[in-house]
Image (cartoon, rainbow, N blue to C red; front, side):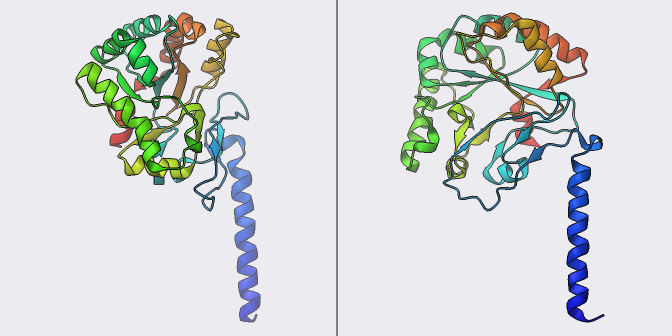
Length: 274
């Protein structure tokens, strides 16, 4: 066999192995393997909109950009998939009368959460922010004005959105805000994440969420519990909204259900230390 033929056969064998690996990875045996498209060569200015899709309940979501790529930008969407831990996060755009019930449930279950707040929330609900801090929760950065950060072209403007929240938090609590950042609306570019990393931030997306944000069309409480329980998974970073009446109603029962399923509640700080 000549050299060219040998190389051709090696390439063919490699292609067959790759195809088999893909097929096996999509089979039932790897139901709990996160699936992501490859965007390693994507332009850092391309606008992305973080979203999830589930092939079936009981498995991990399909995402556009996998953790292996996000790690390069000091970003995460999921924790250790070998641990039965979930990480609770809440986005706080404004106060809608549900945060106290959420905090009560978290306290009852000795569960710590991260609350990503905007500037308006720090100004309009200072006592609730203080309670979050006093009860051991983390208050983190969701930008001051909640803009589409992917449309911001300069690093100075990007930093201004985060710095204003830091200042408001320090003025309220006398403490420095932890450098955790969540892009509003899940819109971002890899350049945004790079800028956040250069500023010392860890960016957080999520691997579990549901349509709880529309206050005019709140989901049924029981159906919401069933959906969130069927889609929970080891290492889940859960996104919920404090504005949701449904979340205020179900939080205690939801946490109980997850505990009965064998889950414990971790913190984003724990993830950063791994």
